[in-house]
Amino acid sequence: MRTAFVILAACLIAGCEGENVPASAPASKSAEARDLKEAPDFNLLSIDGGDIRLSSFKGKVVIVDFWATWCGPCVKEIPGFINLKNTYGDKGFEIIGISVDSDKSAVVNFARERGINYPIVYADDAVQSSYGGIRGIPTTFFIDREGRIAGKIVGAYGEDYFIRRVSELLAQEVENE
Image (cartoon, helix red, strand yellow):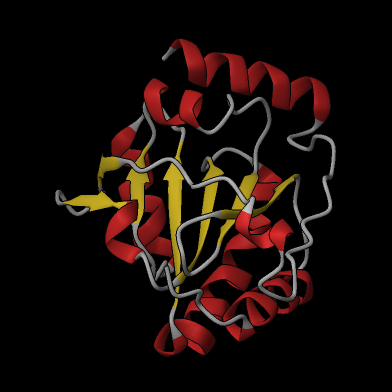
C-alpha cells in the first residue's frame, strides 16, 4: 500500500512519466551482450489466481511492464501491447504486466474490460526493489531470450517503438553456454 501511494504521488507530480532511457540492445554476441544483467526472477500471483514465474519464460523475449489502472500513460500503451502479443506471441514473445494497484479487484475487472491477452500479476515490494525500485510508471523492461535485461524505459512509448525493440530482440540468436 505504501509503495502504491509513493508511486501515485510521483505520478501526480511527474504525470506518470519519468526520464526516458533509450533501450538499445546489442545486435550481436559481443562482450557487451555477455555483460547484460540477468533479470531478477519472480514468482507472483496472477489475476487468474495462478502463479507466474519469470524464469519459466526463458528462451522467449519478454516485456515486463510495471503499470497501474489509474495511470493514463500506462492505459494508453495497453492496446499496443495486446497487438504485440497477437503479432509476436507465436514467435517466442511474451508480455507480463505487473500491476502496482492496491485494489486487486479493479485490476481483474480492468483486464477483462480491455481484453488483455497477456499475463497480469500483482506487484509486491520485493519485485519492485529487485528491479531497482519503481519510481514512476509505466516502467518497462525488455528481457532477452537468455533472461537478461536488454533495456529499460520509463514513461509511455508508442506501439511502433515496441515493435522495433521486440523485433530486434527476436532476431538475436541465443548464445550457447
